[in-house]
Image 1 (cartoon, rainbow, N blue to C red):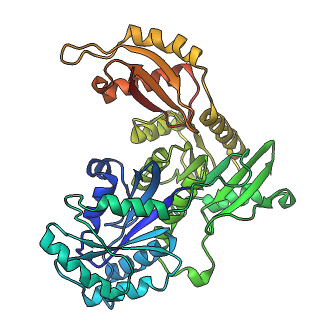
Image 2: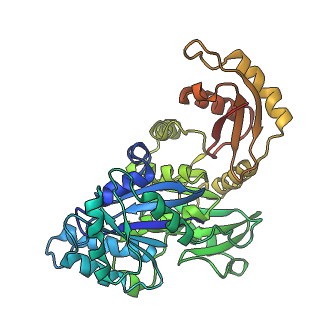
Length: 435
């Protein structure tokens, strides 16, 4: 798993600007995952070869009667509990305020968390001299940055990735790890109960799992895999946060721990923006995906409605449309076991390795028939293709001018790979390299 880094602080210290700086401005607009309430953002980023998730929380406020501000405070506390590292953001231009002291006091209640106190908006040397006020909060090391210009963020990120948990593999490496994810109340609990209630002696819990996600071995009906349960909540003493926000935090963890994600939604209400957001997280984490439209027994059946419904789903998730869709009912058990046959197939597709000779034999004629378009009078010649030795399907195309190959042609190459080889349900990455 990789880690979660939460940005915490009072309002207007520049949390969203720092979030955009860390995940990249264009990426934040195009690929970030919006939370269940406004001003919550989730983004995937990478530094020194280490991937991690960044969470932008709302401004922490105390003593407010406003319901929305109260929810923001709860969500900030949830993010602190779930994160591996905390960026505590301060504003050099306003100095240390009483509210900053209150936030620092809250953070001291989590001594096991890696804390990174960061003074923001340090845009010149004169302001840099003012960061020392922050030492009054009692932290040993204070970082100074400018989110707007990027000054100081490199040193901060160097230390953050050092502090994140090492990438570890879960127990039972040979078994697929399947996460069931989706919004609350779409039927995840019903599906898990259906899968796990019968013949409970066959189901064996695995010790040593991270956080409070429940990893359970499912070994019956010819299947053998690890189910990662995101449906349940923690013990009641800990449930004091917005439940939907907490479900998103669990979803991030579950996706990172999995090989294949089963994305469930309620067929009676349709696929909504939150499903698209979760799907984007699955793709960014390079996990396999199967979509289940649950509660199909509640949908009025017209002729060919499932075909039309599936077409609408794929339109909403374009450009990634090559994944299995199943219309199921966890209540009536309709098509549930068949859908999990697809899950195992997607896992096999994700592990598939295509021999280099076969890849070149099939793909080079396709490229010759439809070569990359010329750019500035220069022609791109792709000479050699190989699958990279990674856990997920990644292909390197070696050519003379890789910088001239644009996204539309990369999608063409991906589509041809999908046409000739079975990578259904799996994100495929294309890289152009100089040869």
